[in-house]
Length: 186
Image (cartoon, rainbow, N blue to C red; front, side):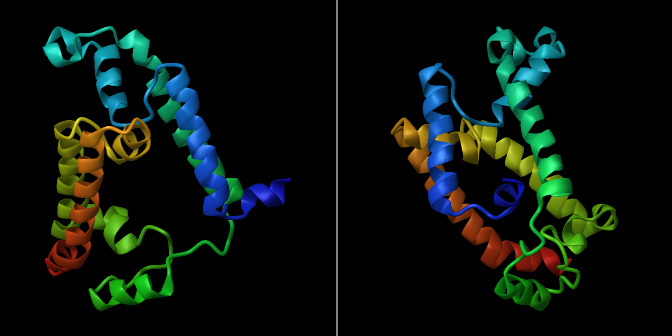
C-alpha cells in the first residue's frame, strides 16, 4: 500500500478524486479554494476591528484554515516520507531554464529562483516578493485563486470562473515566454 501511495498518480485517478472532493464540498455548501483562507485568518486574528472587509462571521469559514493546515502538513509528509525519487523537472524545462541562466535545476524548485540566496538579490525579490504580491492581488481582484476558480467555479459552471481560468492560462504563458526571460536577466 505504501508503494502505491509513493508512486505518481495518473490523471485518471487524481482527477476523479479531486472531483469527489469538489462534489463533497458542494454537498456541504462549501467552495474549494485557498485564497479565502487569508481573509478568514485575518478576520480570526481581529483584522475586522480595523477593516470592514474582514468584519464578518469568520467562524463559518474556519474549515478553510483547517484545510490549508492539512495541505501544508500533508505536503510536508509527502515531501519527507512519500516522495518518489524519479519525480523531477522535465529535461526540456531544465534545458530551457539553463538557456535563461538558471544553473541549479536539481530540485522541483530551482534554488537559483527560490533559494534563500535568491531572496536577497534583485532577481529573487522580483520573483518572490513582487510575484507573491501580484498573485495575492490578482486572486483578490478575480474573486478567487486558481484552485477556487478552476475547481469550484468551473464545477459550478460559473462564467466568471471560466474567464478567470482563461486569464490565468494566458497570464502564465505570457510570464513563461516573455516576462520570465526578462526577469532572469536582472
